[in-house]
Length: 255
Ligand code: F6P
Image (cartoon, rainbow, N blue to C red; front, side):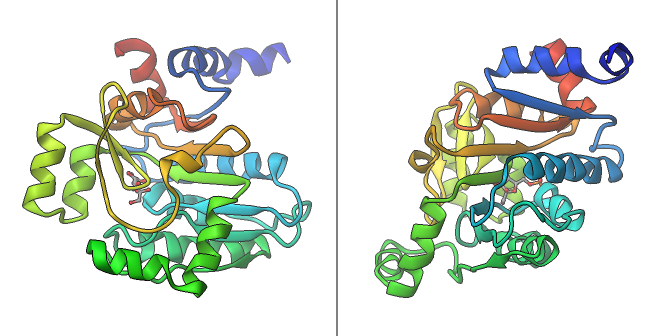
């Protein structure tokens, strides 16, 4: 155990727990800004963690992005959690196909031997279509599954990187910049104090749905994401962080 203590990242993990006020932190070696396989290591750590918490017949809501795609890539059969249901946390958020929550959710389900349901919603949505879509019974059924998910697993991004990647409109980009947004998760943009400065209008999980009874796991690494991670955890909606050494060292030293 002593060897494990000194060779692992337990000191760093403990530091991050205190800095971010989070229940559980896992740090994997490397910096995913520099090496792609580090994302896969975060993916493996995520799958191992899921194996310890998931029970049979539970629902898991997942978001999009490359970190979540890496989790899907290394997903394994979740034998002790038979008949699990994977759902996308929110509707389309302007990601490319392979990084969309729908795609990731289907891949995870297939590899985990679970079920999945998808959300087919265009984005961005006008207020009118939004109201119409949430009124559809078939959509409502999936939205209920999403709201009641036992486990949520999600990415965190740098606010401006995400605004650009999503080809955000000029007006909304201004809102994000003028609001000094630092991080993004679930389509919400947060400033350095964790205050929401902008929210993408789409269906699915709302921040209010992330209450105490859920296990909410954030998967985000890379030195460049340290500020974003810190900002996101200011509003304290997630209880687990799976990250890498790059982000962890930066968080422990500079923030
Ligand atoms: O767009 C989905 C999403 O999960 C965002 O909420 C998050 O900011 C981003 O992807 C993270 O993406 P990546 O893992 O590629 O940095």
